[in-house]
Image (cartoon, rainbow, N blue to C red; front, side, top):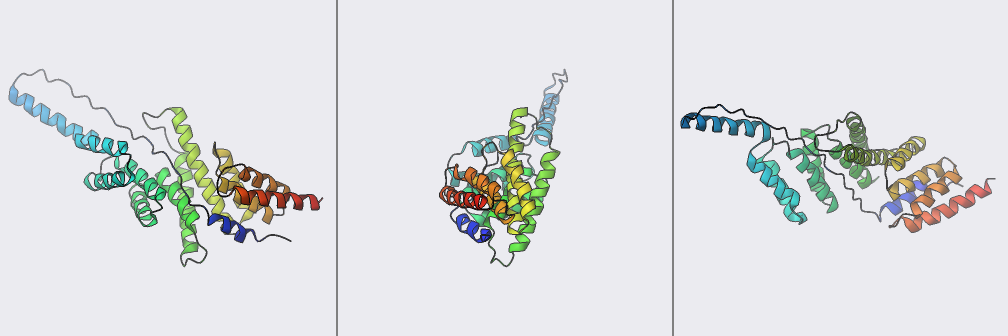
Length: 282
């Protein structure tokens, strides 16, 4: 007799508060070279200086933003960091650093489980930066994990999350290495986004009872991540259970059971049960 895996998995999800960290992609800062005029007239020098400052502000941004951004990045207190981040995006909405501020604010709101501000931040950020793989993958991941079947907009939210994750995958697939990031840093960033996106898609398809599609995504997620999420293995095992692939289910649950956390004991029970089902089917 097949287990009611959607219900059983939901009971374990209730014990888990999602937290993910996606590193913000470094933003390139172009250099500006201003040639010497060779003139000594003081008024000409003043004009040249003013022109240089205008070029710097247009190309590099107001020098004050660099100081404000540096202070924001170095701030360790979450509440103070959030305040500084909000001040930054309000004061310097067109500065190139603002994209990274949105990314970090979203992660802070998620870590504090402040869902109202998280969704407000990601909605605004994605509107401004529609191909930001960090914001897209994080927003889709959180929407999927916060989903509740009883919610009136539950199905619509899953569709939104699916759209976000597919856009994240498309964006990361065409991403060029930003200036200042090594190949290793870019590869690590891409792997984390891929892990989040595929994991979220796998959970979406599981919730929609598309178990084979969920298996495909969860295999991608667990292969992409250096340290796969226990939830991905949990859902993968449930997918296999619903497909009557009990040996594969036991393997997935055993992977989940080896990861410290609130899912560990439940996955151990599921692994034992699946192993017995696999043996009985021989």
